[in-house]
Length: 479
Image (cartoon, rainbow, N blue to C red; front, side):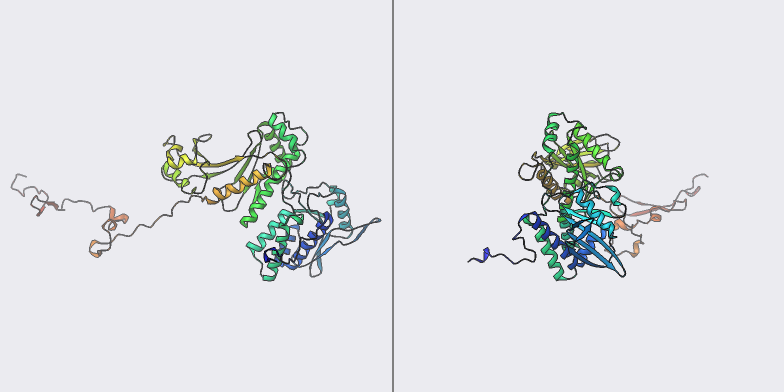
């Protein structure tokens, strides 16, 4: 039997998973066990939920009585520090299964009755805005108990960043965390990625194409929420590959009131057929803006780059072009000048490479910034796979960062240089350039000429002659 067909033994096997119940039980047990085993990962997981630093213990399927019912939350996390402790119940869903309001409210009641601190939910649901919970519950039940949510995509992203970039001190613990990552990345684990644009997608998409969509139509709220969730998923996926925290960008109003963001997207979708949002990637020149145009069937990623503040216009264009060696020829480059609305000129990168002056319509106007944009075909299908909306957006985002944004560096002025101090000619050796002899400020000012200073000239014969200033009576002329 060939060794290529042998399967390596795994700490957390994916074989033998049958049904959603087995999927949830195994995913819960694997995650909670690794939280306990890998100290850095466990601390990083519970800290955002308000847990203190301390000894972490995890349990699965702990029984509780609520009225006359016996309930079994999927897990329980307890952090102990001295005489104090922090406890949270855990509810897990895998695959397409969604969290249920009644079940969560029961667990909130159990947590309140037992003086627990929080209920944590884990599923493949990604809320449109960080901090939101995807399931509506009675707010009165949140007075004494906190309710937190984290998606499996975020759990996987945190695990990868901890192992590959932040580091795990113990090699054995690092291997254990790697086994969890391998398990969650397997399709049988149930820790799926962003898979669906929702039931309302097809109807809203068709209305946008026909130009009949209204802000009051049913389904539009679900579609714009799914688009924001897709941007969050794209951020998590990109951050997992880069090893840094990539997040969607929201204004202060949008962060304070999620309805503002939803209304803005809905209005844009109805009037222009477009949905857009921005992603912030640390240490890049600008925000990555994603625009999905359902009417045109195009998805566009763009970034705005500040121009150098010195040099001619063509010099500034060349500065940008030199950084775009890997960018596709079809990249659109726009130039913006000071004190003007809109772009001064727009050309494809292939044209700008051959003729930088194509972006300079008026050399007298100062170039202030550039916009680089790459467009691709926008899929229309609801789910994943070829021709899907989700995959077309994710592919365009990844390729734009790889080919364009990841290669750009912000301009910075060269530091000023010290002027060399002047020296006397007799102190020079042969290695000092003559141009550097008189660079000190005082040496630039020659001595004032006086009436007693002789004039030195060179005769045609090459001899040096000295002529004294005219003195009345010196030549015998009358005074």
